[in-house]
Image (cartoon, rainbow, N blue to C red):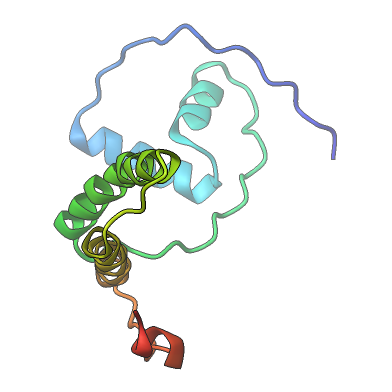
Length: 133
C-alpha cells in the first residue's frame, strides 16, 4: 500500500451544522471508517475517501472520573515527595520511618484508587505485600 504524504492542514474553516446534520455526518464517517474531517473534506472537494483507519484497541473505560482526578492529583505530588526524600538522604540524614511509611501508604492508596476507577478487580495481595514493613 503506497504511503500517503501528510499535508500540512493548518487552515481551519469554521462551519456550523444542525445537530441532525452533525449526527448524519458522524454516522456516515463512521460507516466509511474515516474521521469526520476526512469525510467532509472528500465530499466538499469531490475527492475519493481515504482508506479506512484501523480500529483502535479497546481501552478500559473509566468507571469513576472523580476518583481518577484525585489520583492524578496525588501522582503529581510524587515528584515533589521524592525530591524531598532525596534532599534529606543527600544531606547525610535518613528520613524518619513515619515519612517512609506514609509514602508507601500513599502509593498503595493510589494503586487501589486507580484499579477502582478503571473498574478492575484487584488480585489478592502476594505474601510479600501482606507482610509489609
